[in-house]
Structures are given as structure tokens and as C-alpha cells.
Amino acid sequence: MFSIFKKKEDVKEEKAESKIPERKTSDVKLASKKEKDDLAIIVLPNFKDRAESVNNFICKCRGEKNANHLIYANAVKFSNGEGKVKIDESVRGKDVFIVSDVSNYSITYNMYGFENHMSPDEHYQDIVRTISAIAGKAKKITIVMPLLYSSRQHRRSGRESLDCAIALRELESLGVNSVVTFDAHDPNIQNVTPYSSFDTIFPIYPVLKEFVNDCKGEFNSENTLVISPDNGAMTRAIAYASMLKLDIGMFYKRRDYTRIINGKNPILAHEYTGPALENKNCLIVDDMIASGESLIDVMTELKSRGAKDITAICTFAFFTEGLDKFDKLYEEGLIKAVYCTNASYVSPEMKNREWLHVVNLDKFVALIINTLHNNESLSPLISSNEKLKELLKKNKLD
Image (tube, rainbow, N blue to C red; front, side, top):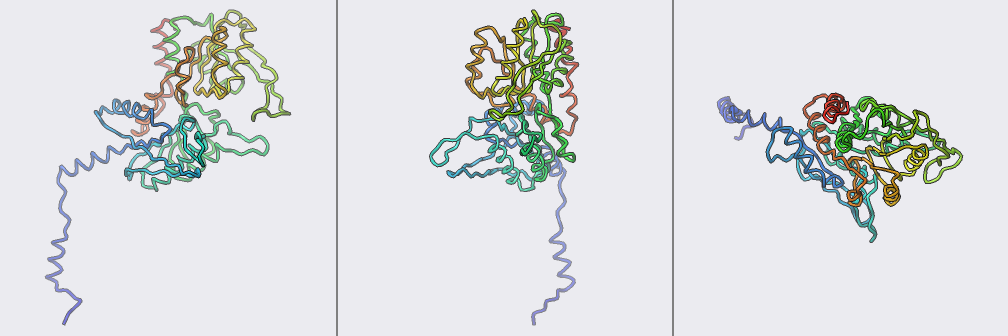
């Protein structure tokens, strides 16, 4: 007769057979090595062209040869405009960094037979889809968004949407641990997510390094001023002026708040306050150039007040209405140069302009990712006063 009960001897034999084998020392070392190497950089199509460069800099930081930390997300668009994101590699237990350039309008897709350029809204939605594809398997998720999505829609005026705030709250609710961006239009936006890490980094040193090396001693505290194009850019202008030991001037934009043209209240006049401008070189510093109309107005005002050479410095250069106006200004001698970064998309046409100097931030992005992955402070990267002092001393500008 069959019995469901087992003899004690049979149970002992089964326990002996099912005993977990001891791990060898070599297995333990291999496991710990794998646990340490948990960096995963998920690259969306809008950052694909720069991904290899960032990976190479990270490998140099880590002393690695031929290592690859990149995972390319497959962003699919259906013919009706809907989309999905697929990740072909496992990210379980990984320290994940999702890198996305939401300004990259060169990415296109076909919808109902028409070619469409992806907008920042669509790029942001792909970030959300990527987080969804991770499905909670990552150890930590950091979003590296050089241009913060909807950063100019950071506060409400009347019955307006708060796009940037909503996006940051959504990312936090989806399990994002940290957001890293450059030169946020208003750093106070970080107050939206007080329980999540938010870092806005001013890439002042990389920009000034290229500017100082190009100038070859052409500017000093006697012949050069830093100019803030409006009161909102004063904090940035003060930072540049203090680092370069220069005096500062400011324009105030007097707007017509009774009308809205192209989504903005039109500027009636630029009122200047600051030192005399006659025969002075001027550095106009701002976070971005959109259409460039406001910048052109400021440059015109500076020239009318006797300014000498005018240089514009910004983190993001969009030139939404084309480059022809700036080509003409350069030919007429109204502007000497524009310095920007590749924190936002740089078109082939922009790269061919003699007056436009694009500062490559790939190494800077790599240092940020590597520093955060090692759970180290970003302060040495953000505060670069000592490095700048050495740079100015080297160029005899201290």
C-alpha cells in the first residue's frame, strides 16, 4: 500500500542531496566584481551621436580599456504617431543613467505619410517610456537632461500650465532618484520635488576656458564689462564677473503686458544701468538664445552707447529663426563672437559659422555621471574657482 509518509532515513538522504554547495573564493571575487560594475547608461536616439564620446571619457576616469557602459534604447514610432521604447539588455540591479537631449529636433518620424520632427514633448515622453520599460528593476535611476524639459514654463501667470513642475513630479512618482541638468532657467524649480535630488550645474569653467584661450589677453578689468541682458540673468552675470574680476552692467526689459506676440509680451525698451560703455569690450551672458531678437536689441543698445567688441556667452543656442540675422551682424561688425555649448542640439549649419564657438561638454557630462555613480560630491565640479585662477594666471589675466 502506497504511503504518503517517508521514512526518517529517506528524508536525511534527500537533505544531504539538496544541500547548497559551498561557494569557491574565485566565485565570490567574480560576484563582487560584477556587483561593482553596475553602471548602465541608457541612451535615447536624441543623444546617440554623442554617447560614444561620453563613454570614452568615463572609461578614462575609471581606468578601463574598451569597456562599454552604454545601452541604446530602441524608440519606436508607429505610423499614427504613437510610440514605445524597448530596452534589449537587462538593467536589473544597475545604477541607471538615462541621457536625453530634449532639444534635438533633427530626429524625425513618419506619421500619416508626413515627416515630423520630434518636439521636446515627444522626447520627454520617451524618457517616461524608458522608465516604464525598466519596470522597477534598476537599483537607482538618474535622469541626465542637459536642457531641462519645459524649463521656461516654470511659473504660472494667469491660467497657464506648469509643464516643468508637472514633469518633475511625474518623474519622481515613477521612481526617479535624481535629475541632473545644466543652467536651469529658474533653479527654484527644484522646490517642486523636495524629497528627490535635483542638480542644476552651470558649465561656467568649460565655457570660460575656451573663451580665455581664444582671447589671448585681449580683455582685462580696465577695458571689459560683463553685461546682464535682463534682471533674470543677474545671478549668472555676477558669477562670470566675479570669476573674471570684471565690472558689471545690466539691462532692464520694459515690456508691454497688455499684449502677447509669439507667446511673449513684446519688449518696449531696454533700460541700461551700470558703468559707462564707451570703448568697452562687452560680454553678454545669458542661459539661452532662442530667436535672438532680445540679444540683438541689447547689442544694438550697447553699440549706440559706444561699446567696442561685443561677445555673447550662453549655455543653449537654439536660433529658432535661423542664423542669417547673426551672419549679417557679424559682417557689419556688431558682434565679434557667440560662445555656446552642445548641451542643446547643434545643427551642422551652426558648426560651419565662423562667429559661433561651440564648447563640447561631453567630458563634463562624463565626469558628472562617474562622480554620481561613485556617490561622490559634485561640488569640485561645480565650484571651479581655483582652476579658473590658474587659467587666468597662465594667460596673464589675473
